[in-house]
Amino acid sequence: MIPVKFDYLAPTSVEEAISALGQHGDDAKILAGGQSLLPVLRMRLNAPEVVIDLGGISSLRGIRDDGDAIVIGAMTTHHDVRDDHLVKEHALLLSKAAAEVADSQIRHRGTFGGALAHADPAGDLGAPALALGAQFVIAGPGGTRTVEASDFFVDLFETAIGDDEILTEVRIPKHTGWGAHYEKFVRVAHQWPIVAVAATVKGSIDEARIGLTNMGSTPLRATASEQALAGASATEDGVRAAADLAAEGTNPPSDLNGAADYRQHLARVLTGRAVLKAAGV
Amino acid sequence: MTKIELTVDGAAVSDDVEPRMLLVQYLREKLGKTGTVVGCDTSNCGACTVHLDGTSVKSCNVLAVQANGRTVTTIEGLADAAEGELHPVQEAFRECHGLQCGFCTPGMIMQAVDLLAENPDPTEEEVRLGMEGNLCRCTGYHNIVKSVLHAAEGAKS
Image 1 (cartoon, rainbow over the protein chains, first blue to last red):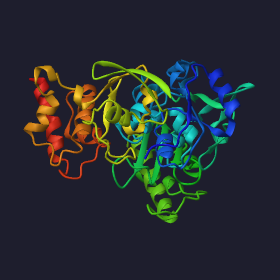
Image 2 (cartoon, each protein chain N blue to C red):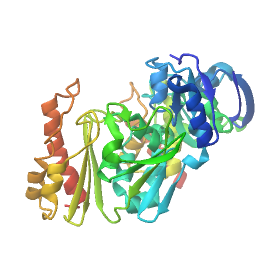
Image 3 (cartoon, rainbow over the protein chains, first blue to last red):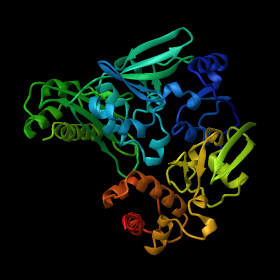
Image 4 (cartoon, rainbow over the protein chains, first blue to last red):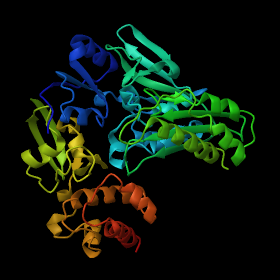
């Protein structure tokens, strides 16, 4: 199928894009890499009157060092996030998670900011962004504001980005030298995760940060496991005991891929695996 | 209608297209490049894979207007047709019988070329992972993987 007719705008600056959004409001949709939006348009689950393509705004692409953080432009592709040397050095968890998004072709087109703004609870980048304490820079008619990861994800497919705003970049506090692993559980290749766990640890183990994918309507932190791991030694028994707390406070969905209690079981098992691999055990 | 100008298989083309037109539709219906096929129409199967500025994309999941100013290579532009030769990856698929019905083959070959450009000497597992966005309902994948590995071997010698 092909999408319903729409008007196409290709702004060349963020200001131009925001002004177009202001003009068209609810009737407009932002097109980033299009790897989630185009299937939605083709299946006619949505029919915006105007599509605003950010592909021509070069300032939204690229990754830079900014002192105690690295800054990832919203239109940077998953492929580039995966391979970037700054990401590998200071936020290894993101490189590992970006490598697991969909498949090679999708990673060449899909964007870091687009995926986070889409906020699919089964998306692979929300949990690592949350675990790393990402800060989201959002531009609107009144200028830019910065939103903490804990406030960014609001609900299913809903973020703190307002109707007249655009996510421009994401600041990731440096986690230099932290071990990391993204453990994704799927039935078949390039599927959305049934559950996935993003874990990054300092030393073995001074501090642990763990994000959960598809364990609720937004990405979640496995806070109880993180607390149990802080200062613990990275033994298999110790990590598995801490991982047993990973599903505390979660409210995962039940669907064809698994019931809620099965997902909670997966979260515990996958957290154990992810932390052990992140710690190099 | 929106005006687009791009390079497809080495030739400059320009057209007025509806913004909703998919790149794969543009290639097939406007340019007659039916070597690129539509398999699933849901961005799962990879049969429509082409190269956009040198990297593989699913052309059913890109708008024609997004290819404005860019370079597209399809299965039809891969080999030097004037010389009557196949591309080495096409040749490898023929030698290893990396197909049965052949429907997935254009996408498989375009993805394999991309994979080998990034990783010229892949392991079998790296081939299987690198081709995960391309589905084949006939072969069970073994001969496709063999073909890609054979092409990598051939490039070394």
